[in-house]
Structure formats: C-alpha cells, structure tokens
Amino acid sequence: MTAALIALLLPLFTALCLLLLRSRSGVLVIVTSLLTLLAAAWSLYDVTVNGPQWLELGDWPPPLAIRFQLQPITALLLVFSAMIHLLVAVYAAGSQHSKTRYTDFWPLSCLLQGSLNALWLSGDLFNWYVTLELLGLAAVALVALSGRKAYGPALNYLLLSLGASLVYLLGVALAYGRYGVLDISLLGAMTEADTTTRIAWWLMTLGLMLKAALWPFHLWLPRAHASAPTAVSALLSALVVKGPLFILWRLWSEGAPTELAVEAGPVLAVAGIAALILGGWSALRTPWLKSLVAYSTVAQLGYALMALGLLMYWQLPALDAALWLFVLAHGLAKASMFLAAGELQASLGSKRVSALRGTTETMPVAMFAFAVAGGSLIGLPPSGGFLAKWLLLEPMFETVNHWPWVVGILLGTLISAGYVFRVVALAFDRADPVPPDFSPDRFAHWLALLPALVVWGLALISEPLIHWLTGVPL
Image 1 (cartoon, rainbow, N blue to C red):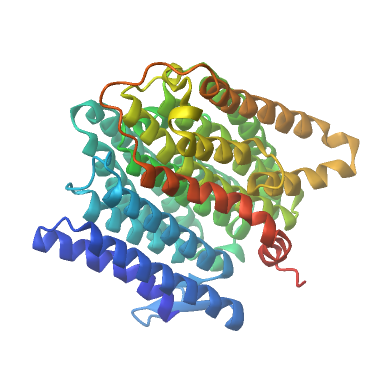
Image 2 (cartoon, rainbow, N blue to C red):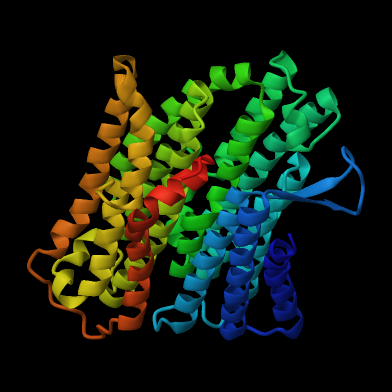
C-alpha cells in the first residue's frame, strides 16, 4: 500500500510546489510522472504477490473509517494513468506546436493526476464525490487554457459537472439515510432492492453518466474536447471520463443487490448501443477533425457501457475483462489519435477533415498513428480493441436470443470503420499544396504513434492479461 500512497502523493506535492514557487517546469512534471509510474508499477507487483490491501485513514474502525483499497484493477489503473500522464507531459514539453509549455497546464495536470489516483484508491461514496469534484475542476481549468474560444465550452462543462455532482450527492444522501454507511464493501452486504435503494442508485448513476459523457448525457464532451489544447484533449479522453465509469462499475457490481442490477442492466446496455450508433453517426458527419475524434469517444464509450450493462444483466464475471480491456484499449488509442490530430491541425493550419488530403506523403508518421489507433477502435485483430470486443461477443454466441446485441455491435463496428476510413481515404488522396509555414514536428509524430503501437501490442500478452482480469489462474 505504501507504493500506491506514493503514487497518490507525488503529483499532489508537485502541484503544490509549482503553485507556491510560481514555476511552470515541464521537466519537474516529467520526472514526477516517471516516479509515479515506478511507484504504481511497484504497487501492481505488490498486490499481485500479496493480494488486496486496505488502509483506514485516521485509524478509525469501520464503518466510520474512510478506507483506501488497493485491488488488482486499482493498481492496473494507477499504472495506466501514470503512463498516459508521462506520455502527455513529454509531448507538452517537447512539441513545437504545444500551446501548454509555459502555462498553468503543469500544476493543473499534476492535480488532475493526483485526483484521479485518489479516485482509483477510494471505496467510499462520499470520498468519490470529493475526488470527482477535484477532477472536474482541474479538467475545466485545463480546457480553459485555450483562451477565449474555450471559455464557452469550459463553462458548459463546469455547469453540467456541478449539476451532475448534485444529482450524485442526492443519491449518496439517500443511500446513507437508508443504510447508515458509505463504504461500498459494507453496502454490498446490506443493500436491498427497495424503492429508496432504487432511487438512490439511479440518481448516482445519472450523475456519473453525465460526468463520464455516457449517452445520452454526452452533449458537453465534443465541444470541450475539441476546444481544449491537444495535450489536454488527450488527457480528457484517455483518462478523465474513465473515472466516473470506474465508480459506476463498482457501484453496480459491488454495492447494488443482484435483483436491482439485473433489472437495470438492459437499460445501460441499450444506452451503450445507442451511443455506438448515434455517436458514430455524428463523427461521420462533422467537418472538424478534433470533433470527429471527440464524437468517436462518445461512440466508443458505448462499448464499455454495454459491457457494464450486460455484466449486470447476465452476472458473468468474464465481462469484467471485456469492460477493462475496452477502457485500456480506448485510452491508448485516444491518446494517440488526439496527439496525431493536434499535430496534423497545427502543421496544416486547418481544423477541417478536408485539409488532410495527401498527408500520407507530407506527414506519414502522424497519419499512420491515427490509422493504427483507429484500427483498434474498429476492432481489427489483433489489437486491444479486437480482444475486448471478442470477449464481449463470446457469451452472445451461446444462444440465438442474443442476436440483437450482436447486431448493435456490428452496426457500431461498421460506423467506426466509416469515420476512421473517411480520414484515411482522404490522406491517400492527391496532396493539396502545403502552407508556406508548414513545419511538422517529427518527434511529436513518433510520440503520437507510441500508444497506438502499445494498444496493438496488447495481443502479445492477451492470454495472461485476460486471465488476470478475470481472476482465473493460467
């Protein structure tokens, strides 16, 4: 547990130092991210060898204690978030097109990382509320770094996030009034499928779906992600929207009575299919490159929401692996796509998809990164996206009654292929004349390619990873 606490405290301490010293040192944040990654990796090793661990803050006994919990999936998410933060920090410090190099991006990104790590480790409904607020405020401030053009989307994000927090907090108050505890592990043994519990769980679910931009509560996401600086867009799409999804997963898989979970599962699964189709359709239609990538986030989160809904409905532990493989594969692919899209826009001087003609000749590495990451979103084998989709489809092959879910996944896959190949086809078209100030940053292009290669490299460790996520020994 010590290593996990180090991974939590390091970015928070760095953010405080940067604010007090009024420093905007990207090197310090890179070093912090590297040390955080090492601490997270050690916590992953520790929990693998010694099993789950708990820390009661303030030495209070349950149910008064606020407990941090280190579980295998928690440790994996600590490693994943530290890896993405390190990648984005190197990009923000090294890219010639980065607009965050001498801004408040550095203390805010550290605060974002610390808040997210606290969220992963928490297991208390109110503690999750606190970490969600810290995470949301840091994310809104990061979006606003783009200047005046981003103030509207940032304000919209802030207001909707605060509204979501109030709805979530009302659900927490009802749950506490009904059971007298907030620890999710204790609630799991006490909850009953009565009216109060139903209202409380659905209120918390609605608040979390709005914060995670899960369909149909996604309207704030495309404008916020498209307006933010490139480094911020990568963090928002790869990591920030995953925090509320993690809470949603624990809320229904650990805290809800089985009867209530089975009842609510199909609703979330249908919302996931709607996200795949409608989010993908919006990505197909938009003329703006970063908006296309942002709408694809709405669509791809539909897979995770569908996996969660079917996990609740069928009560199949194997779908846990599908859900978290989607999270990992999506986070890596989106970090790559947003970094590549930001570099393409900055080099070409245009935000339009139509400006990408001929970029396989002028910026082959950046376009290759976009295409490779897009292949995982489509689910091409042997990418991480394919592995997650296969795990989701496997239980559906057992009976013909599951064909509507298969059709929904197929439609989502076809639409994903449509918006990815829309960009790739233009890139192979005849090149437009490059602008006079055309100056691609080759280092940033290779950096954007790195997470795309990692998401395809998941195939090399697919068997042990799946067994580890499902808790089944090799």
